[in-house]
Image (cartoon, rainbow over all chains, first blue to last red; front, side, top):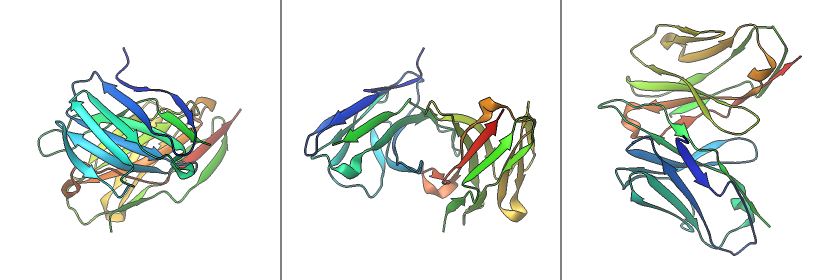
Length: 115
Length: 115
C-alpha cells in the first residue's frame, strides 16, 4: 500500500505551459506539504496545509498555486512554466502531535523538466 | 537565525569503515525537534530518526547511532561498518516549536560507500 503517492512521476513540458501535480496520502494525516528540490539537492518548503487550511506559504512565484480538496489530497498547479521551475517536487504528510511535531512521510517525487 | 548546517558536502568511505555525518543547528527556541532523513539514489526521502530538544539521550538502531549534544547544538549521525547500500544523501532537519509546521533542512551530505 502506497502511503504518499504523486502523479505523474515525470513531467516534461514546454515553457509557458500550465501543469498540475497531484498528491494523495492514505495515512490519515492532517498536514501536507510541497517541497522543491533543486539540482543541488537543496530542499525548500513551498506550501503546507493543515486540515485543508493553508498554513505555510513561502516566497514562491504566484504562478504556483496549491489546492487541497480534502485532508488526503494536496495538488500543485503551476502556470506559465519557466526553465527555472525544472526540479523535483516532493509531496509529504505528517501527523502533528498536540504541542509537538512528527516526522514527515514523503512521496516518490515528480521530476519536472521545462524545455 | 534558524538554520541547519551540514558542513560536509560529500564523504567517501570504503565499505566497513565507520563514518560520522555532522549536523549543527541554530534556533532561538528552547523547544525544537531534530530529524535525519535519507535519500538513496532512487530518490525517495526516508525518515530515520526524530529527537526532541528535551531528550538528550543518544540512540542506536543497528549500525546507526545518533549523538545529540545541546551544549554544542549538534546532532551527529554515525554509521558503523558502512555498506554500499548506505550510499545516499543524508539530510538533517529542524522544526523550531514556534515555527509552525515549517521544517528547515540542511543542505545534505552525500555519502559514497565503495566496495
